[in-house]
Image (cartoon, rainbow, N blue to C red; front, top):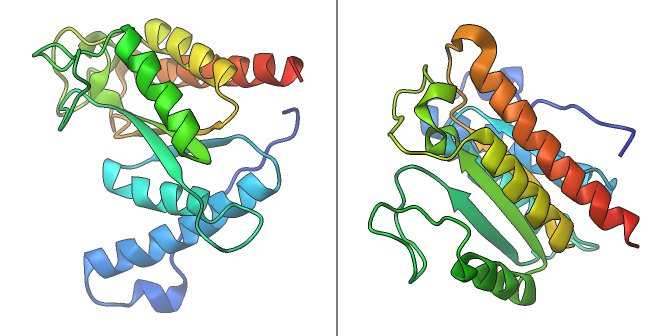
Length: 200
């Protein structure tokens, strides 16, 4: 973990002249997927700093094609968002998962069924005081300290937990609170990976 690789997905000059934002996004996500797949094959822990949630398919596609062959492997996903689309049976009506046994049961299930697990965080899930510049923040979110502890536990416990991504990092960040929150959560995930590696 002492070494790191930093890459950015970008369109080629020819691709940048193509018509249509969605087409250009698709091409950029293809480049992003290639970077993630190489990163994984090279043995690095993947941390994605995503402009928005629609960037997530590039990260997941890269994980899918990071196996020993180009054949896609199975990816499980844990998605934290203030605006959930679906929840586990024990989820409250507010959408808050907490640390209930259902969360660990679902992670155990993903661990059995998939080759790798990706943890995705939409920054709107955080306590609004840490994401004051986010356009979709909602009250009563967890703190970055709480999520850092959760990520440490997940990445420590599950060897298949191999990547984490942060989406919609606020464009304005008065006092640097959002950047500090991201850094804190990344540190928690890395601490979990190091704990897991120390048990080998």
